[in-house]
Image (cartoon, rainbow, N blue to C red):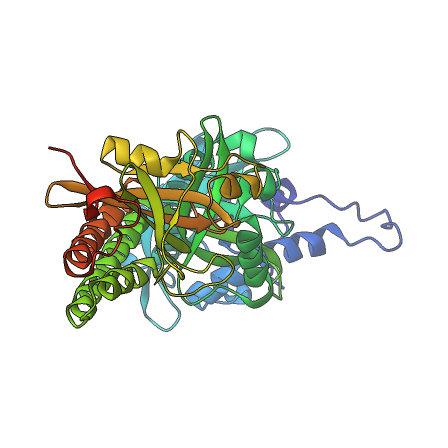
Length: 471
């Protein structure tokens, strides 16, 4: 317990006890309560009466300077024991000046420890008035400068992170609801900072919320992961759903005031890396497809049969690109089915057994459009169309996305190669069409060579020529 000397200053700081009145049963006397409060403070505190004598000295002051309350209380100022003699007058004058000055006064002093060492402290002093309103003393709270600077840095860092940091910061409570959102995170989540507070994450994230909540729950239970995690989510915005990739780090927040760690929630820091990830994925896709074309060219060069070279090229092209492929060749003014992959299971592309069969495509069929335009055509089934869309176009039943690329060689259109995807894949995009056209060039060369060598694809063509001349 810290010691204190009874004076008017003590009365001004703590409650006055009436010596003629017994305190109610179970209550703590005012002097004991005051001593307990002072000793429980995180900051060092001392108090002076109007004459400059020390009246209070708490445990933190004893920890910093090494002087006990018994050694400190009753001394006049710091001269001769807690400050150098040369500095004593200036220190005492600046501290006691707070008695007649409104507000708090902040100073930095070099004080002496009991072991002779010096410590730089930052003080906040303020005057204390008695019951008559006259100055009765000064109280002074102080801490080591480096500790104060560390605290200020921590506060400044927190404020900077929660305001204008160049990455998102979200504080989430134990119920996984945002309690603080900085400006970057608010923009990323598509709402105002105050409007996002307290809302379930499922209201903000359409897809991927399970992964996000799972990561937050893991941090609450087990602590922060050792490395950042990349989470793909889909957000609902006024412009529609947006798919984003967030590189995220997590920190478990615990109360510094509890004896044992009590989780307060999770600090979630993230950056939007969607552009970089998409560029990385595109580079990987281009590299893979280039390798596949290279492998296909080497395999085709070893094939004696041009038809085998064409089908093996398509087998390499299918990897990671499509589920089925169909080759239709021109015979006169009609398209005939010349080769295809199995319609009911994965398998290699093979010539149609029993010879090519006419493809009875109706007007507006994507393959016919590709022939007419001499270019690629993309098509997808409408939502809910089911198998009817594919069956009507004479494609495998599970097909929902199609990409038709025209086969051209020596200035002639030879037919169409159609790549098909099932519902578990996305629709074909422009980069996919460019890849399909590169494959079609190689297939068309092999088909043209097959015609010259064996008459492959001549069915129903008067005069025996494959393809048609556009000249």
